[in-house]
Image (cartoon, rainbow, N blue to C red):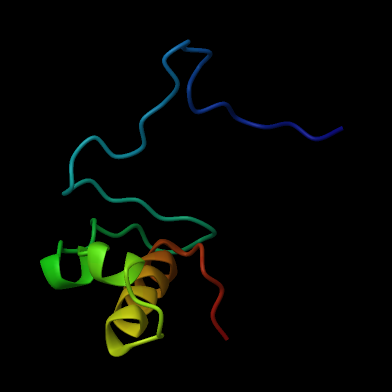
Length: 78
């Protein structure tokens, strides 16, 4: 029988992991890290939603997502 720890302690409002950008979070044995810096050019999704071709802007956003997930230990690496 598996046992699990609840993070929300049964709160009807759910749970929050990291209340501030400076709080550290890590998963799967990774060292906890601070939230990645906001880069407006990489978070401008309007350019992505209107494009029919895969461009350098698309690649930059995908790489930012990968880097964020890697930093948290969620995206597996070799």
